[in-house]
Amino acid sequence: MSFSVLLNNDNQTDLLYMSKQRKPRGVSASPEGLKLLKDAKASGIYDEGKSLTFDRLAERANEISDRTVKRFFKGKPVDLDSAIAIIKALNLKPEDVLFSEESLLSESIEQIQAKDTGDSERAGEFIKGIETGLSKFEKRKEASLEAMEWLKANQKALSQEAAEAALRKHYEQNQNNVDTDYSGDIEVFSKEIRKYLKLIYFCLDVRSWDLMDRAIKELKIPVNRDLQLYVDALDFIKNQKVSIRFAPEEAKYLTLCLNYLIKIIPIRC
Image (cartoon, rainbow, N blue to C red; front, side, top):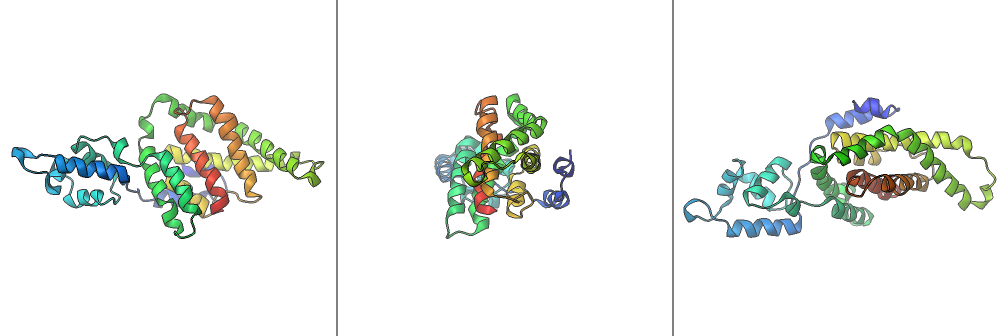
């Protein structure tokens, strides 16, 4: 299904363009992963007892270029297939070498909140790591795909309930408006929340976290009201719907997407 069909809003052309223009991001080793790589290379032996040089490691890793190997060992991003080939050539596990999604989420939020780092750098490490996880998404167990399809099938109902819960909380906290009838606003707000859910689904479907980050940064999704309302609505979906419907591992990437939006909306928008 195309991105334009999934979003079905005024920004669909811009978002589709972003999707087509997106270039795949590389992946890099975590600090702990770099140490594992260097230790494994230092102790590695090539044919006839020779030490394991970058050239020889490149040959062992499906004959990728030694330049790529050196780049990876410097902590620079390389494409996922090359990274995995290098890691396996040293008898290591990708999950032990590459960044984990959870740690990158926490680090990304801290970087974004810091004042001494540029926007592109703040979210870069998280995006880079999450791409690694999303690239493996289609290989995950059936329950993970079930969570994604559940989101797609229940977007309207989830958005309706989340909008109502967020607006009710907002009006209850503003005593001056306690008697205000906000029922008419629920339908409008629920349509806005649905666009966020469609964005999450599409990013999971095409395994592109970068697209979500750019949609937020370039305001391709609704920010027409108090930002806390969007946060409260998405938090409701995460805690009152997803966490009850699925076990943590089953909805891992769906929860990560919701967490990212919840943390980033007040900062980026």
